[in-house]
Length: 285
Length: 273
Ligand SMILES: Nc1ncnc2c1ncn2[C@@H]1O[C@H](COP(=O)(O)OP(=O)(O)OP(=O)(O)O)[C@@H](O)[C@H]1O
Ligand SMILES: [Mg+2]
Ligand SMILES: [Zn+2]
View 1: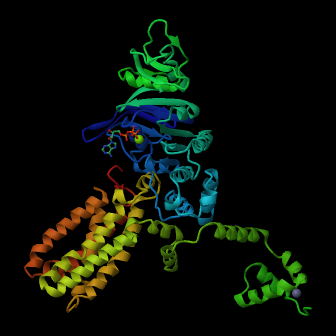
View 2: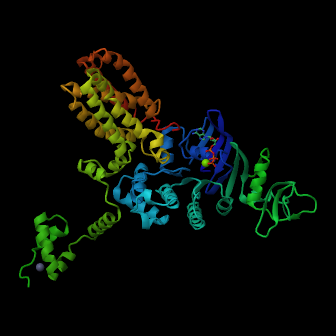
View 3: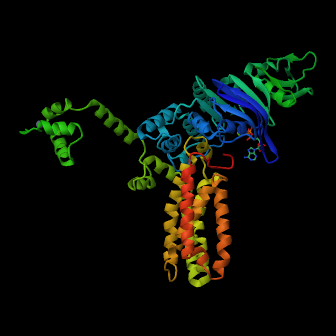
């Protein structure tokens, strides 16, 4: 396992952001799902060595990030896209990525510039590489964030909501880039987009109020909603959640009344059910 | 028609890049017109060298020209990677520097009016550069702090590079203000060693607290010790000969401590590092 987190607890003042969390992540894309404030960013920052847990153990790439030497070795093989990644807005795209490459200790100018060009091409930024970051659209900036995370082909890639604020086409491109990045290395990402998670992740962990409510594959999560989603001409009183879909009928999620017209569940249905019953705790291995 | 040709020795030296500039220039002018010499030179040229030159040309054309602060630093002999790190220091933005300069100009003007203000200015002078160091590391002002924290670059080295950059810019500004003081004698420079000492003390404290807090602690201690005596008209405690030697010792001691502990101490670059 590239990432191994055991009983990690982290509090900020009186808020418990993470409460005894376990997580394993190996090759492929592992997704963290959960509502606002669930603790996803806190866990990703711990995995990115930016934050240390108050209690619990973390092993990354076989090393212990609480030891300064190990931490440096981990950071040499780590790429991180923070949730609210900022930029030096006066830098051009090339200069900014080059700056991060320097922080990643690529000291020789020529090979460093080659690497900067490689990630710029990979993320489709070649046409704006000489533009100042302040002149870019939000989606383009998100690409700059992904580009810097890919510098040096890291073995562990930590992406906090990489697809937020992207239009559908760009989101597809990002999915492609991320799933490509997940081949032969470990990607841990968070998202609110259940479609992104379904499309990308080999494993998911669902968070709620600092605790892990589910770990397993996307199919295992979806299967939990089997028999609990039904179509009706009206909003059902028994439903935890119900919404009108394109053909005018209502999609109801919860405990169906007798004789309900069951429909196949999606990951989103299962996620809603899990959030509606937060005391439920499920772990698949 | 050309009647003369480059001699074999000149061709060899030019091809290896070893020709002095005048020879290279005249050889190039000749090569433009003479196919015979161009053929002769082709057999001498090291293909690896051509490759390297070509890559350099592509890189120059493709990588943007460094910004002017980076070019100035390069002129001063600073490595291009270090120059980029300096250029990313939040303090070194125009508005911030104009702010310091403005406050100082106002203080100098006030010091002309009231002599007690002059003494306050001396007390305040080291705070400008110190504040610059704090700003360089204030999390909210470095938009890429999180990315930097997750990168392997040594926190201490970054701290030193940025501190040197901040001092390099703020000290001349404060010094200029000092020179504009009424009856300015050695006092105009007397704040330099305290500044160095306070900065080193703050840097040494970064092993225990974040740079912003460390600067706050040091600055508070300085103000508490110097203000009452300066207001009473005694500047010796902070600026006398004994005090100057003391600050020199603090600066050297702090510097040595940083050098000795650089591999064992983790710099706390932010609240969460
Ligand atoms: N630096 C901090 N200081 C104080 N509280 C914090 C800090 N970071 C996180 N928190 C709190 O910890 C909890 C978890 O936050 P976190 O950012 O990890 O959630 P999240 O799952 O990433 O949410 P979102 O989906 O909105 O990004 C929240 O209640 C948040 O307010
Ligand atoms: Mg978050
Ligand atoms: Zn000739």
